[in-house]
Structures are given as structure tokens and as C-alpha cells.
Length: 71
Image (cartoon, rainbow, N blue to C red; front, top):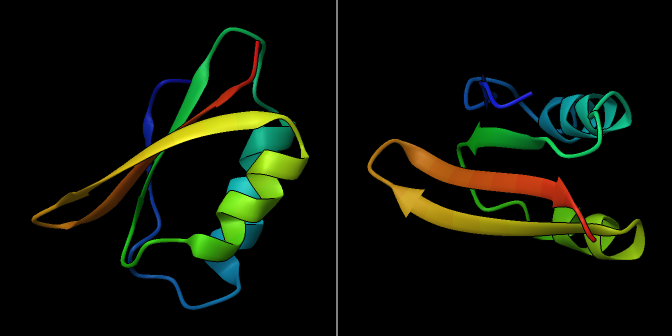
């Protein structure tokens, strides 16, 4: 799953719920790319506790977060 999941138009908690649902279906060796309206600080804690690594970067249109399972 390397497509971009654009969640900028959604209000909390729906973006978090959608990211977590997408991660449940994430095949090994793939990554999830998510575009959000703001940086998802609460999500980072969940990712760290559940064995994911991530990289985030601000773009003109939002915060792009790329998530993958830790090796």
C-alpha cells in the first residue's frame, strides 16, 4: 500500500481512526503515506508503542507522514 491517504478534510478523531485501520491492513514490506492537516503528535506515541517507524515532513498542503513496520 504505497498510495497516499488524504485525510486533511476530516475532523478528529476520524483521521486517527482511519490511519490505525489502514495500519491493521498494511502488508509486510509496504508503507502507508498519509496527508494530514496538522502534525499528529498523539499518533507518534501509538506508532512507537506498536512497532512502527515514521517520517513526517511539512508540505505546502499539509503534513505528510510515511509509516512502515519496524524491522
